[in-house]
Amino acid sequence: MFGPGSGRRDLASEVDGLGRRRVLLITTKRGEPLATELAAPLGERMVGVFTDVQEHVPQEIAEAARTAAHEARADCLLSIGGGSVVGTAKAVAAEERLPIVAVPTTYSGSEMTPTFGLTSAGMKVTARSLDALPHTVIYDPELTLTLPPGITAASGMNALAHCVGAAYLPGTDPITLMVAEEGVRALSGGLLRSVREPDDLEARTEALYGAYLAGTALAAVGPATHHRICHMLGGAYGLPHARTHSVVLPYVARLKDVELARVADALGTLKASDGLRELSEQLGCPTSLAELGLPAAELDKAAQLLSAQGILDLPTARELLHVAYDGEWTAWTPT
Image (cartoon, rainbow, N blue to C red; front, side, top):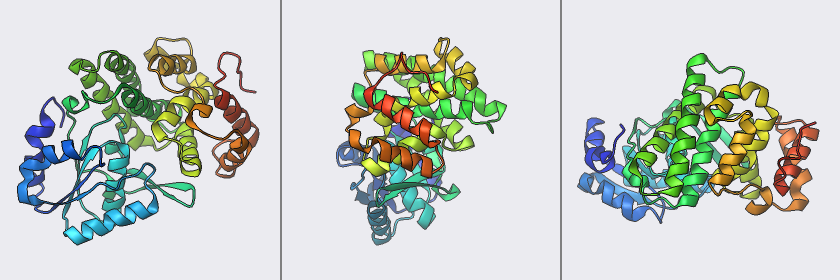
């Protein structure tokens, strides 16, 4: 479902349409006031609230959420929040086979995919299950009007990365490529306007539309190279997932520029990598791994992890991480 006001207007009827009577709300502590307001029309049907959400979904958090669902005897999950929130709901749904009604409040696009990640012992592992795919997604751009510019920009770059990945993966079909290209156009324009004028509902609507397209593209093709790099860095070093995308995406795109002509066209640039870097800078996103807190002493170890997981060969991994750590751009030409 898509449209201003849909989060407040349609949530209860969508739960009723599923025939569910015991709903567990999953959100963050910060997002709980808004989430409980949106869920208020459910009344006694809302039987519990889980707010111990953490980025990268640690295994112990997933287990705690599953326990909460058991104790509440939940027959439905209501996810209100960003990518970490819906990721936690997916981890429960995949095991318990409960339907998810998702109300995204950022631009991650995760709500449209059957994939989710769990982190244990410094390793983030991605799983895929149709049981994890939300049954209903309610896109209400009004719910993103108060999203701070930094979160708007970072979560939007995360979504944009899904479109870029779909554009360069060799198995992408023509329809998914078209969806990805349209997603790049919608996100690049909508995000810039949303950051500059946060209360511009038209811009927020365009960005949320782009996030929907990005999630749809990711669901069709699965995670690409940059996504896998960000998962590894996030799981091993606790780097913030969305902001890591804003740093890594242009560098991986530089390795793939030949395949990204349509992304370049959508961005209005000669090379997709340059357009993505420029967009990241215009949005005020971080542009170096140093800004995210990755220790310089860990770069070679991180490169070895990327190589061991088959994400990049070791020389390329080392080169990319070192230039991304410093934020070098114009002088870097991949060897």
